[in-house]
Length: 260
Image (cartoon, rainbow, N blue to C red; front, top):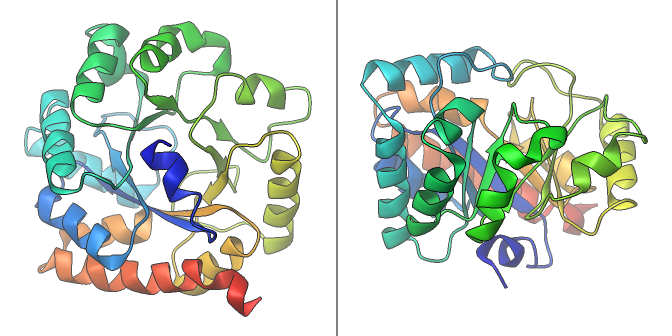
């Protein structure tokens, strides 16, 4: 089994935690997420024009780019993370330009060599899978696709085809961090996705608190938290803050169905 499939096969929902590479002491921040109980790590690749990210992650991108973070730096962070945490799944999340500007084959091979398990590319639609998908699959990296509230029945098969690892359900038709969808709509969407695929379904966007995460974990296979964690990366003693919040989120997510 892959690291990702193992993370979603523990008999409980998984906590997926996102931070931006190069924003603060990334190595210490990643270690804090693992220590707090994160099951999967999403590492954001900083980009100048993020279309799906809200103010918190936009600010993190600017801080990271201002510090001079490059794609090579992100891969080095990933490689060092893998050395420290051989069993924790690591997913790179970002946009097409940094992933394909040197060629998708280069990026996929480098990511695989650094121990990356999956990639989420926000702005390559399924219809343009050839731009990155084949190179990732050839290197054993899962391509994790996004489904949204506007992904209708006609389009869903295209989203799921070629997707692996898990399906990321974006719970709102908007950007990260600013709002959360109603629980009923999330439950309905997850049921529809699980009726169409055997892949785990993780829900993100707008999830900020343990209470929110626990409610989603009752119906989803995983819960993704990003902006609430990213905001802590700009604080003094960021790792301490991150570990504390992650532990609270992990407890809520892991125990959600026991309390249902």
